[in-house]
Length: 157
Image 1: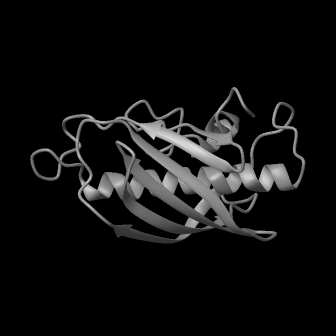
Image 2 (image 1 turned 90 degrees about the vertical axis):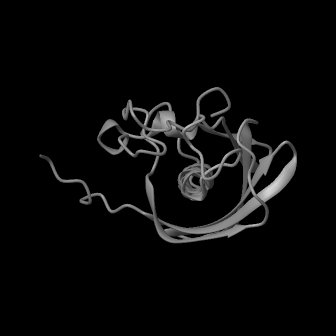
Image 3 (image 1 turned 30 degrees about the horizontal axis):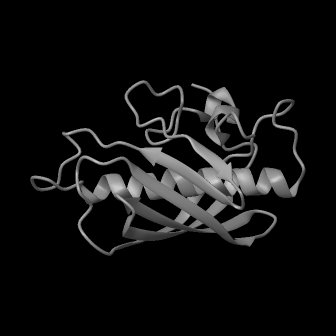
């Protein structure tokens, strides 16, 4: 999974999320990759992702933590099950709980870096801790409880 992001392995019918869906042309389309035992994502906010002049909107920060964390959960789950993602789609997780602590204003301009560690991995639930950095400074921390989507979750149109 080193060359492709976990989101690239999501099945098409589950790839429309505004934050991480590769098939949502209007969304953020974030990409999360393993780097050792952490999942890492980089995202550069646009000038319209503003809260007050010079700073990133907090809702964007929460969205990035949310989607990167559920991607991290999927990657950790796949790794724990030794899934060959070149053969089968990645498992898909949704958020059961999202907690974000804003530690300092996040400047608008630099690329943001998100780093996630897996705190707990169970059969259907993964707890992920994510830290968001701007210019090497910690700006926010999040905790996400992610749950595995049941197979019958997605219904046709």
